[in-house]
Structures are given as C-alpha cells and as structure tokens.
Length: 610
Image 1 (cartoon, rainbow, N blue to C red):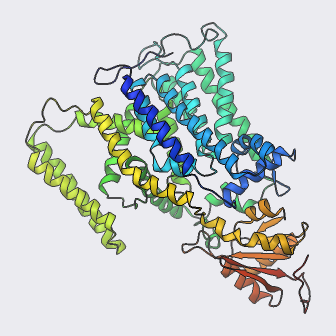
Image 2: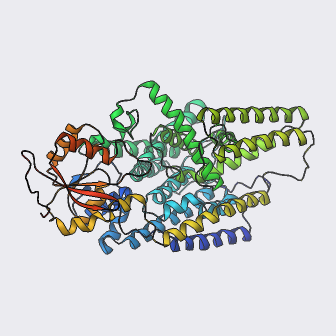
Image 3: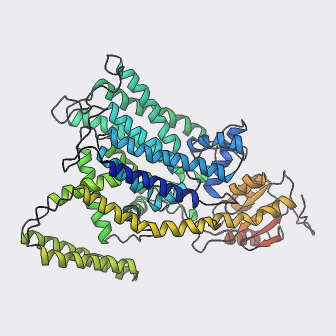
C-alpha cells in the first residue's frame, strides 16, 4: 500500500470522530435514499432500455431489445441487473435495491481510492459529501447506471495508484512504497499489471460510453511520464497503462462492430454531427456550429459543476457568475497541481471526461458529471488551498482583486442585458461580485491573522457542514414527493396508454410511437418503433409502413419538448399527407392512440381490435 500522505496541516489518519461522522452520514442518508426512492409503476426511456436488455440477457436471447441487436447503451449496467431480473422479473423494488447497492458500494470505492492514493484524511469528508449530495440522491434513487460507473471508475483509478509508480521529474524513484503485489516485484510483474489494465480498460467504457476517457487518459499519462518528464514508469506501470489502451481498443472494436446493426439515426456519431440533435431537420453541423455549440455547452457544464459543489439545484449557466468563474479558477488550479503529480492519471481522466461531456450536444443536468464529484471536490480543495496560500499580502494586490471582481460583475450585467433576462440568480451573482469587490477594498490592506489556515480540518468540516445543510431541504422535499408516488414525466406519458393496448390489441400487433416506444415494448410485449424525428411526412409514413405498425401512440408533448418537431406536429404532417389512414381510437389525459390503415385505399370502418 502506498504510504499515507499526511494532511497539509500535519495531521495523518482521520480521527475516530471523523470516521464516526462518516458512518452517521452513511446510515442517515442511506436510510433517506431507501425511504424516499422513486416508486415507478411504469418504466420509460433509459430505464426501459436497461430493464428490457437485462430481461433479454436473463432469457438467453442475447443483447437485444425488441428482437433487434442493441448497439447504443453499453452492456455493463444491464448485465449487472440480469441476475435480479432472472430471480424477480421486472420488479421495480428489487431493481432499485440492486441499483442503490451498486451506488453505495461505489461511495465505499471512493474512500478506497483516496486511501490508495495516500489521501486517507480525505476519505471520511468525501463519504459525507457523496452521501449528502442532491445529485447523488437523484441518480441513486432511480434506475440509472451512474452508481455502477462511479464504482468501476474509482476501482480503476485505485488500480492506477497501485501499478503506476512513475518517479517525479528527473527522478527514478517510485511514488508507491513497496511493490503492489509480490508478483509485480519480480521480472514478470508487468504481465500481471498488463492483464489488470486490460480488464480495467474494457470494463469502464462497458458501463458508460464516456468511459473511453480512461484509455485516452492512460495514453496521455504514458506520453507525459515517458516523453515529457523523461522519467519512464517501471515495467508494471507501463504494462498497466498499455493494458488499459489494449482493453479499451478490444472492447470498442467489438462494440462498434455490432453497433452497426442498430438504427443509425440515434447513433452517437450521427448525433454529434447535427446542428441540433433536438431538431434533426436542421441538418448537419459545420465547423462554426460545432464551435458555438461547444462554447455554450462549456458554460452549461460549468453551471452543472456549480450545482454539484454547492448542493444547490437548478443553477443557471451565467458564464460571468461569481460561482462559475471562482469554480473554474479553483478546480482548474487543483487539476494543474494533480497533473504535476508523479502519477497524473486522475488529472488526465478528469480532463478527457470533461472534454467529452462538453462536446456532447445534450444537457442532462448533473447526471453525467456526478461520477466526477469526488475528483471535483478533491481538486477543488487542493486548488483552494493553493490559491489561498498565494493570496495578496498588500493593499495594491487586493485592489487588483477588487478591480477583477468589478469587471467580472460588469461582464455579467452586460450578458444579462443582452439576453433580456433579470433572473434572480443572475442578479444575486452580480451582487456577489459587488460584495467581493467591496470586501477586497475594505479589508484588503490588513494582513490576515496567522491563525487562519485554509487547510485546517476545522475549515474542511465547516465547509462540509454548510454543504450538508444546504442540501438537506431539497433532499427531504424530493424524498417526500418520490415516496408519495410522483412519476417522471415520460412515465406519465405512457402510463394510461398501456392498459388500453393490453386490452385492445393482441401480442402480434406492431406499435409506433412518437416518444417512449421502449417503455411500451417492456410493459406490453408488443413490438414498438420510434417515429423518425422529422417533419417530412414521406419519411414518417415510410417508417410506419416498413415496420407494419397498426397502432400509433402520440403522447402529449412536454412544456419544453425534448425533440422537435413534437409528436403532435409529426402526427399532423402524416394526417395531412395521407388523410383517412389515421383514426382516433382512444384519448387519455397525456396523449392519444390512433389505428393505422395499411397502405392503399383507406377502409371505411377501421378496426380497433387485433
């Protein structure tokens, strides 16, 4: 095991009190997760995909969904759910318990990783942060793969701390004291390390596609350590990094090869090349479109980072906001310090992961960034300590800080004026900049008291106490609403359609839907096809006729529709192009169901029984 790095203030292992606080957090917030979990009667969207794929695996049909080989969602999470489905079927309670277990084991893996890298003092505080995070609660109480992904990422980085023992710049000494295992200490140790790397390199992207960031980080680490620093890792470290590259390549060659069998319209590569994947009819993106979209996504992801670090939901992406720019500076400094470690694998993984998320054209809130929370918190803390130690000691330096704060507030005020927005958050951020400027001018000339230390344990726990206090009201509110049976919006769109379909169609009936066909398939057993997201009636009818669909489900659009044109708009285009082929069969509070006549002359009396 690597020697424990003492806390920057000189303390070593966490006290018994700190371990006790972490244990209390696990019990209290774990109980809240269990008590306030969602109670889904109907599984929409991603959840339906995961469960449907797990059911196919449990039944021995292979990795297929609705009898079609699946090539979009990686197999890791469905495979983990397969034993549960095999024993209990599609039981939401059992599936949620399995997902919760994966997530909380993932939190344990966070502590394990911190111990492996020598930051034993940070393990207890990080457990409390993870346990009390609103974003963690949102993902762990749903059927999502984030908990399992956090688990495999933390174990992968812990393995990196074990095997990659590169010395500091200009030194051949290793950062790990003692060999990782007795096998690594001999001449054949690199074989064992390479095998572990292959397993790690394949398993991380097999849970989430964004896990490709790990092979990219392994390559960057290998190049930096061997070429830039001129201090090559020992054979075990080199074997481990090369193994990650090989494992990632093997997995992706297999995955990309079978992905060709799935629909190309929703493939990741196709989505990345669109001007706006929410509105595919806008066409393909040019270089300017991609640059503009990436800049906007960066601003959005910084806002998501602020949500994670403040435990406040729904932070708006004002790029000039005080929390946004402070976070960029603090976390950026922490990443820079991490990249200078003898083993920079975590820093490069963070940068590669964040780069992929910024390029991704969808905003999923904090969902995609939640697995980065331990690294964000660790890097943010390190960056804060480093910047605090470098704070100005003269009145002139503090006046410079005040000038920067005032200019940043002016930038944000201009941004809000251009947007025509006076959102309360934006006004509060401007007030924050004004307060920072006034404080710097008023108190900047005073030398800080020597007793103030940004890296003292009491400051760490004081910040965590604020983090917990801020998040608790939101956690209690969401847990209460979830326990009361509040459904996710996609689930309510299909809930009332399912009983009608079961009562009025036979199992061979083919369905088409403008949204959420995967939920219809999982709950009815009927083959269900998604209509293309286009206003082109010819393409829409061609998709319906090729599928042989005889029932069309048109759920009601959300107030802020996810895809354009909306389902109603696509239905209107089809009805205008071929009037008489669609007949209203059932209307419910969240949508409508139509029967579809076969191609050719419309029947005068369409049947609603199949």
